[in-house]
Amino acid sequence: MRQTLVAGNWKMNGSRESIKALLDGVKAGAGDVTSAEMAVCCPAVYIADVADQLNGSNIAYGGQDISVHASGAYTGEIAGSMWNDFHCKYVIIGHSERRTYHHETDELVAEKFEVSLNAGLIPLFCIGETLQERESGITEEVVSRQINAVIDRLGVDKLGEGVIAYEPVWAIGTGVTATPEQAQETHAFIRRMIAEKSADVAAKIQILYGGSMNAANASDLLACEDIDGGLIGGASLKADDFLAIGKAAG
Image (tube, rainbow, N blue to C red; front, side, top):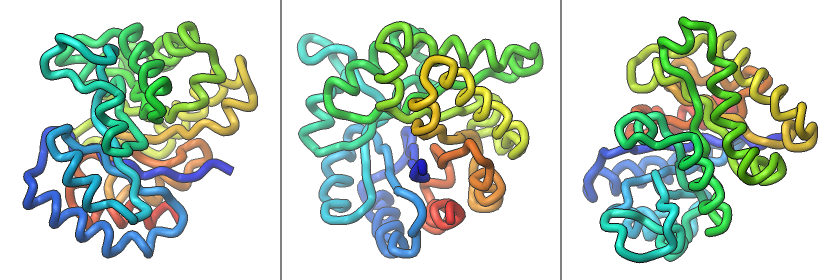
């Protein structure tokens, strides 16, 4: 049975003071979350604080991006070994904001998937279509292309070592959420297309939903057969909301 994962993506938000208060709240209520793993992915400058504060807790943590380079003259980049220095478990790759604002291609994201695994990190591999692509009826084509970039580079078994986060771009930070039926339909398609290459990988891989999941809609989304958790944006910045999503997994 696949474990539910509720992972927070703080994006470029927070301060040392606000993060301490947030994590104090999450830790205080985490014992009531019994059916999901909780994790947070923070801006790089706060990773030491997050690691110190979560030490000894059952809340995992990680970064928001990774360089394809191990070291060298790459100003501003973060290597996998640097995340490892702080005992990170996860790293987000391929988020639509990185694909859009930093022009990351499917091929680059696939390379980051490989680098993450080589560093001993679990990639939270983001995929999803824009509103124009959905309205054009090519959602399945888009997510297949994004996933196949990883499979073509590494093989389907390696894909199974990561976590997929389906995030329809039109529902990220907009307050608009895919209906449970829309989300389940795409999640089921993703699992079927992976099953064509490996039934074992398809059965075990976690597929999270991202895109304005919040305390109010989490129960309905997480009740869907092929939705194994959430990659949470804005709601992960409020301890009560984040914990409510974790509890909804039960």
